[in-house]
Amino acid sequence: MTGAGELPMTAGMILSAVILVAAYILVFTEILHRTNAALIGAVVMVGAGSLAGFYTQEQAVQAIDANTMLLLSGMMILVAILRPTGGFEYLAIHIAKLAARSPRRLLVYLTLAVSLTSMLLDNVTTVIIFAPLTALICGMLNINPLPFLMAEAMTSNIGGIATLVGDPPNIMIGSAAGIDFDRFLVHMGPVVAVVWLGTIALLLWQFRHELRPPPGFTGRIDLDEDKAITDPATLKRALLALAVVVTLFLVHHHLHFYPAYVTFIGVALALVLVRPDPATVLGELEWPVLMFFAALFIIVGGIQSSGLLAWIGQHLASYASDPTHLLVTCLLLMWVAGLLSSVLDNIPFTITMIPIVLDLQIGGVNATPLWWALALGVGLGGNGSHIGATANVICVAESEKCPLDGATITPALWLRKGFPLMLASLTMASLVFTLFFGFFS
Image 1 (cartoon, rainbow, N blue to C red):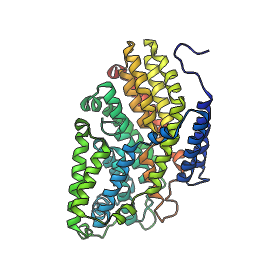
Image 2 (spheres, rainbow, N blue to C red):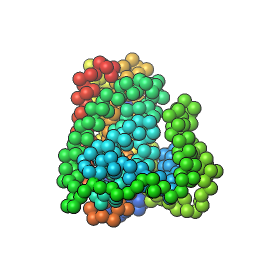
Image 3 (cartoon, rainbow, N blue to C red):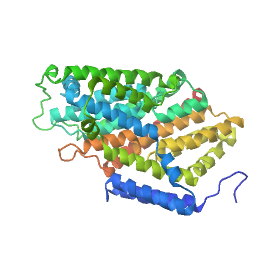
Image 4 (cartoon, rainbow, N blue to C red):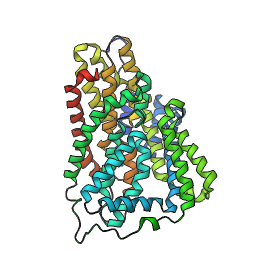
């Protein structure tokens, strides 16, 4: 028996969940390549949804997040223009010389750089730039890039939680709740700092064997970074375009520019200044990654259209009707958001929860701590699986290019390393949230 206004469980919800689970089994078991599995799942979701009446072809097209797809494409184009200039090699040699004698120190330096950058740029952009750079550094040192790529993806997700512009859900939450950049940083920054330190400690322990210097390792880099740059004129022009993108990323929310539009401003500028061959540049794009995300958006769109996410959100939010349950509700929201975001894209869940939290706020419930709990949950949850965050998939794809044995990040490996780390980070965030609940209220 459902209460007034309560959503009942429907056959469409169950069917969409079954299709989602089946597609994810194919992805995680690697029976099929993840892109093939996701495309098959998307086709089945649209077909079943159309027959059952909960999902249409029009809704499937609308479910593809064009902002994310274009942001990924635009940054890949900029990286493709930069790559032949030797700029990445220059930076790789410079970083390697600073920390090459200790793989553990190299991991800390790289993850710190990634985390800080993710606070200003979105974490997807950050990883697109750092993943190939990391592969170059590890290639120079002849060490396995796997722990470095995984650590960068995870810490980029964590770093992105700290600011309003670090992760797309933050922008949505800030807009709905009226939270500005400074307030977001003041509240999320300390939690992120605690979680980041704990995560680095866990990563160093998890990869303690992989981070041991291999036999004969000296850490010496007998390369001159100044000689790495092969096309300084193109490098300067491409960096100018990238600088424009970075600058606009810092203020795009004030200008009401989508991140994707900001990226393509830089792309347009680079095309004018560099005039690259479009066939060569577009051939450098990671098309399997882009197709995987498009298909994944369609699958998750079916879950959303069936009402399953709204059903979960409504039952979760109902606990907050009693003010004495507010802390418990916040922690429950954080953990449910985290667990769901480890397998689903966090944007649909955020979109679903925002009107529910706003309704509670209108009804007199203090919704402020719920906003912070939601941001922490959807941000930290992405580390739970290799498809839990866009940054993860980019790093997995980069690892697959490495010729070294054991360098590929498999779904099973990510679950073994990432899921416990996600649980630990949610636990750390919950402890901080509970101890300083008054601050978040």
